[in-house]
Image 1: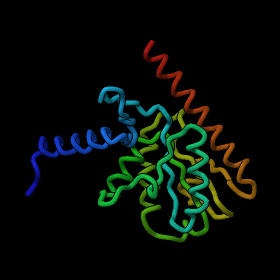
Image 2: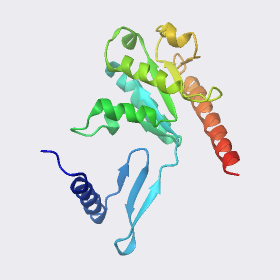
Image 3: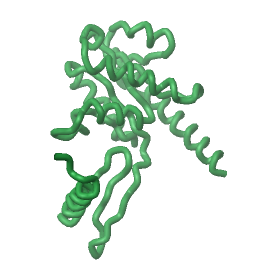
Length: 195
Protein backbone atom coordinates (compact mmCIF):
# COMPACT_ATOMS: atom_id res chain seq x y z
CA UNK A 1 0.00 0.00 0.00
CA UNK A 2 1.29 3.45 -0.93
CA UNK A 3 2.04 5.83 1.92
CA UNK A 4 0.18 9.21 1.80
CA UNK A 5 2.46 12.08 0.72
CA UNK A 6 2.02 14.13 3.92
CA UNK A 7 2.91 11.11 6.10
CA UNK A 8 6.01 10.44 3.99
CA UNK A 9 7.00 14.11 4.24
CA UNK A 10 6.55 14.03 8.02
CA UNK A 11 8.77 10.96 8.29
CA UNK A 12 11.50 12.59 6.19
CA UNK A 13 11.34 15.77 8.30
CA UNK A 14 11.66 13.65 11.47
CA UNK A 15 14.72 11.82 10.10
CA UNK A 16 16.40 15.11 9.16
CA UNK A 17 15.55 16.71 12.53
CA UNK A 18 16.82 13.67 14.48
CA UNK A 19 20.09 13.72 12.55
CA UNK A 20 20.54 17.45 13.16
CA UNK A 21 19.78 17.09 16.86
CA UNK A 22 22.52 14.44 17.05
CA UNK A 23 24.97 16.97 15.60
CA UNK A 24 25.09 15.60 12.05
CA UNK A 25 24.83 17.77 8.96
CA UNK A 26 22.27 16.71 6.35
CA UNK A 27 23.10 17.34 2.70
CA UNK A 28 20.41 17.46 0.06
CA UNK A 29 22.42 16.76 -3.04
CA UNK A 30 22.51 19.69 -5.43
CA UNK A 31 20.59 22.02 -3.11
CA UNK A 32 22.62 22.49 0.05
CA UNK A 33 23.16 21.35 3.63
CA UNK A 34 21.15 21.66 6.83
CA UNK A 35 23.37 22.29 9.85
CA UNK A 36 22.59 22.43 13.54
CA UNK A 37 22.87 25.71 15.32
CA UNK A 38 22.61 27.24 18.76
CA UNK A 39 19.46 26.66 20.83
CA UNK A 40 18.25 23.88 18.51
CA UNK A 41 17.92 26.25 15.57
CA UNK A 42 18.84 24.84 12.21
CA UNK A 43 20.22 26.71 9.26
CA UNK A 44 20.30 25.84 5.58
CA UNK A 45 23.50 26.55 3.65
CA UNK A 46 22.70 26.60 -0.09
CA UNK A 47 24.97 24.83 -2.56
CA UNK A 48 26.87 27.49 -4.47
CA UNK A 49 29.55 25.36 -6.09
CA UNK A 50 29.22 24.38 -9.73
CA UNK A 51 28.10 20.76 -10.05
CA UNK A 52 30.17 18.33 -12.13
CA UNK A 53 28.81 14.91 -13.13
CA UNK A 54 31.53 12.35 -13.87
CA UNK A 55 30.65 9.50 -16.25
CA UNK A 56 32.95 6.48 -16.47
CA UNK A 57 33.13 2.69 -16.56
CA UNK A 58 33.89 0.68 -13.43
CA UNK A 59 37.30 -0.42 -14.72
CA UNK A 60 38.48 3.22 -14.72
CA UNK A 61 37.37 3.95 -11.15
CA UNK A 62 40.89 4.48 -9.78
CA UNK A 63 41.63 7.32 -12.21
CA UNK A 64 38.12 8.72 -11.88
CA UNK A 65 38.40 8.92 -8.07
CA UNK A 66 41.55 10.99 -8.57
CA UNK A 67 39.64 13.32 -10.91
CA UNK A 68 36.75 13.52 -8.41
CA UNK A 69 39.13 14.51 -5.61
CA UNK A 70 40.72 17.20 -7.80
CA UNK A 71 37.32 18.73 -8.63
CA UNK A 72 36.27 18.71 -4.96
CA UNK A 73 39.57 20.30 -3.83
CA UNK A 74 39.21 22.97 -6.52
CA UNK A 75 35.84 24.21 -5.32
CA UNK A 76 33.48 22.18 -7.50
CA UNK A 77 30.74 19.86 -6.29
CA UNK A 78 31.56 16.60 -8.07
CA UNK A 79 28.95 13.87 -8.52
CA UNK A 80 30.21 10.30 -8.62
CA UNK A 81 27.82 7.37 -8.26
CA UNK A 82 30.11 5.57 -5.79
CA UNK A 83 30.00 8.63 -3.52
CA UNK A 84 26.42 9.85 -4.00
CA UNK A 85 24.04 6.90 -4.55
CA UNK A 86 22.39 5.60 -1.40
CA UNK A 87 21.36 2.00 -0.71
CA UNK A 88 17.94 1.28 -2.15
CA UNK A 89 17.91 4.43 -4.26
CA UNK A 90 16.49 4.23 -7.79
CA UNK A 91 19.88 4.73 -9.41
CA UNK A 92 18.80 5.28 -13.06
CA UNK A 93 16.50 8.12 -11.97
CA UNK A 94 19.07 9.55 -9.53
CA UNK A 95 21.68 9.59 -12.30
CA UNK A 96 19.35 11.32 -14.75
CA UNK A 97 18.49 13.94 -12.13
CA UNK A 98 22.19 14.45 -11.33
CA UNK A 99 23.01 14.93 -15.03
CA UNK A 100 20.10 17.35 -15.56
CA UNK A 101 21.06 19.48 -12.57
CA UNK A 102 24.80 19.51 -13.27
CA UNK A 103 26.65 22.50 -14.64
CA UNK A 104 29.18 20.22 -16.36
CA UNK A 105 29.20 16.64 -17.60
CA UNK A 106 32.69 15.13 -17.76
CA UNK A 107 32.77 11.94 -19.86
CA UNK A 108 35.83 9.76 -19.16
CA UNK A 109 36.72 7.76 -22.26
CA UNK A 110 39.16 4.87 -22.33
CA UNK A 111 39.80 1.72 -24.34
CA UNK A 112 37.68 -0.09 -21.74
CA UNK A 113 34.71 2.30 -22.05
CA UNK A 114 34.74 2.25 -25.85
CA UNK A 115 34.08 -1.48 -26.04
CA UNK A 116 31.80 -1.92 -23.03
CA UNK A 117 28.02 -1.84 -23.27
CA UNK A 118 25.95 -0.49 -20.44
CA UNK A 119 25.05 2.53 -18.36
CA UNK A 120 28.06 4.64 -19.42
CA UNK A 121 26.74 4.90 -22.98
CA UNK A 122 23.20 5.56 -21.70
CA UNK A 123 24.57 8.42 -19.60
CA UNK A 124 26.38 9.82 -22.66
CA UNK A 125 23.19 9.76 -24.75
CA UNK A 126 21.19 11.45 -21.99
CA UNK A 127 23.91 14.07 -21.44
CA UNK A 128 23.92 14.90 -25.16
CA UNK A 129 20.17 15.54 -24.95
CA UNK A 130 20.76 17.81 -21.94
CA UNK A 131 23.63 19.56 -23.76
CA UNK A 132 21.26 20.41 -26.63
CA UNK A 133 19.28 22.56 -24.16
CA UNK A 134 22.31 24.57 -23.05
CA UNK A 135 22.91 27.93 -24.81
CA UNK A 136 25.34 27.56 -27.72
CA UNK A 137 27.96 29.83 -26.14
CA UNK A 138 28.17 27.66 -22.99
CA UNK A 139 30.12 24.47 -22.38
CA UNK A 140 28.38 21.58 -20.64
CA UNK A 141 29.74 18.33 -22.12
CA UNK A 142 33.51 17.88 -21.59
CA UNK A 143 34.99 14.66 -22.98
CA UNK A 144 38.33 13.52 -21.53
CA UNK A 145 40.52 10.63 -22.65
CA UNK A 146 42.22 8.53 -20.00
CA UNK A 147 44.31 6.73 -22.63
CA UNK A 148 44.81 6.61 -26.40
CA UNK A 149 41.26 5.42 -27.12
CA UNK A 150 39.01 6.60 -29.91
CA UNK A 151 36.23 8.98 -28.87
CA UNK A 152 32.94 8.06 -30.59
CA UNK A 153 32.47 9.97 -33.85
CA UNK A 154 29.13 11.44 -32.80
CA UNK A 155 31.00 13.27 -30.04
CA UNK A 156 34.45 13.90 -31.56
CA UNK A 157 32.92 15.48 -34.69
CA UNK A 158 31.25 18.20 -32.61
CA UNK A 159 33.04 18.50 -29.28
CA UNK A 160 36.75 18.93 -28.55
CA UNK A 161 38.14 16.45 -26.02
CA UNK A 162 41.04 16.77 -23.57
CA UNK A 163 43.75 14.16 -23.06
CA UNK A 164 44.61 13.33 -19.44
CA UNK A 165 47.62 11.35 -20.62
CA UNK A 166 50.61 11.31 -20.87
CA UNK A 167 50.52 14.44 -18.67
CA UNK A 168 47.63 14.09 -16.21
CA UNK A 169 48.24 17.46 -14.52
CA UNK A 170 48.32 19.43 -17.78
CA UNK A 171 45.09 17.78 -18.97
CA UNK A 172 43.30 18.40 -15.69
CA UNK A 173 44.46 22.04 -15.70
CA UNK A 174 42.81 22.48 -19.14
CA UNK A 175 39.53 21.02 -17.91
CA UNK A 176 39.59 23.13 -14.75
CA UNK A 177 40.38 26.30 -16.70
CA UNK A 178 37.41 25.76 -19.01
CA UNK A 179 35.06 25.09 -16.11
CA UNK A 180 36.26 28.15 -14.19
CA UNK A 181 35.84 30.43 -17.22
CA UNK A 182 32.35 29.03 -17.83
CA UNK A 183 31.51 29.44 -14.15
CA UNK A 184 32.57 33.09 -14.26
CA UNK A 185 30.68 33.75 -17.52
CA UNK A 186 27.49 32.23 -16.08
CA UNK A 187 27.86 34.37 -12.97
CA UNK A 188 28.23 37.52 -15.12
CA UNK A 189 25.12 36.56 -17.11
CA UNK A 190 23.08 36.08 -13.93
CA UNK A 191 24.22 39.45 -12.59
CA UNK A 192 23.39 41.15 -15.89
CA UNK A 193 19.91 39.62 -15.90
CA UNK A 194 19.33 40.57 -12.26
CA UNK A 195 20.51 44.16 -12.71
